Length: 218
Image (tube, rainbow, N blue to C red; front, side):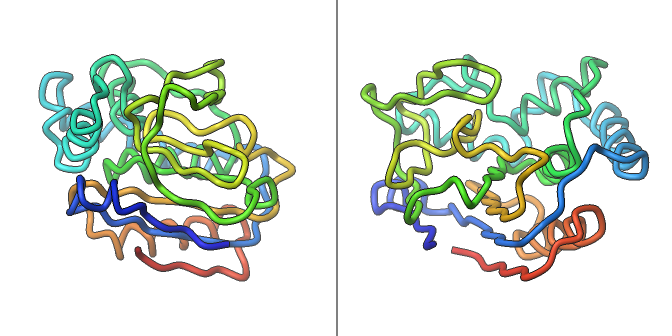
């Protein structure tokens, strides 16, 4: 499976880089060690940012600018990292979902990057990052049909797989997922992307018993 960025997105978002991680993993209910790490990050975010300053975080601001460039309102369709951090600032709990999802949420909050996590066995062919259209039928996880027109979207041979706002139900990770694909989307630099990729790999090895790991930046 190859992952690439379309010329349209590359030209419109020249700072964009994506960290790619592929691995064999074991998913599980979230244990206390990981949950405590996530709670500590929630506390850090709440003490560092306010709702009116959060959108100025470089990684979040860069992703919001990509939405504006393609005609999407980032205040109406929140970037996932921004939405997570806003919950922390407002004192709202995050849902305890599973080890893999909560691990990705931890990395997203710390880095500010929108991160896609996909069941690689459900992806058909290669994946390309393009821009959503009015003809795209996209079922956001827990959201129903999501209007992704004007959003950056990864597509495989079947259709949309992931956007900075939500991933697709068809390729979502579950407790049965064993082959993982992660995309860390840096529309503007904040945490050094190499560092973010390496930290994510370390967390996957620690909490998801990751093996056969392949990682690179495009």
